[in-house]
Length: 221
Image (cartoon, rainbow, N blue to C red; front, side, top):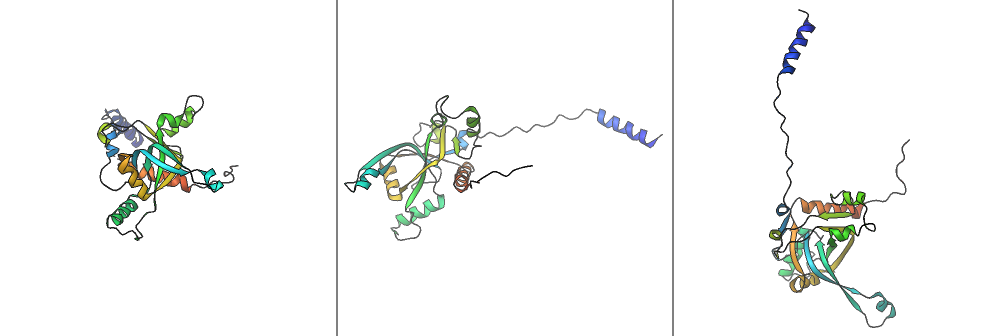
C-alpha cells in the first residue's frame, strides 16, 4: 500500500471518531458582597465611601476685598478616600500616640467627589452620549470610574448605596483633623472597596493624574 494512502486512511479513522464535548469555562462574576466591605475600625481607609461630608471653602471675593473672610459650606452627598492606606494608618497611629511632630503626620486627606451614576451620565441629549457611556460603565474611559450598587449587607448603615460614578477631575483635600472631626459628627462612613477593586480604583486615579498630553498624535504613512 502506498504510504501516503495508508496515512490518509489512518487520519480518516482518527478524525471520524466522536470528539468529547468541549469544556466551556464559565466566567466568575463576583457579587457585590465580594466587591465591598462595610466600614469599620478607627482610621480612614483608602477607597472608603463617605456620605454627607462637609467642605468649607473661603469666599474669594472676601479675600480680595481684605474685609472679614466669608466661608461657604459645601456638603458632598458622596466622597471616596484616595489617600494611601499605609499613610492613613501611620498618621492615625502617630496622632493616637500624640506624636504630632512625627513625619508620619499627614497634613490633609485626599478625596474624590462621587455622584450617582445617573447624575454622572447626565440627562438624555445633554449628558454623555451612548458611545461614551458604554465605555464609562465598564471603566474603559480614563477620566471616569463606575462603581456598582452597594448592597445593604456591605453598608455600615445597612441601607445600601446606588450605582455611583467618579470624575477624576473632581478631587479635593481636607485637613486631616477636620476630616476626622467631620466623620465623628455629621459625615457617615459607609463602605470600602475590597482588593483588587481597591487597587483598580487607585491605579486608575494615579494614571489619570500622570497622563501626558501630546501636541499631536503619531502619524502613519
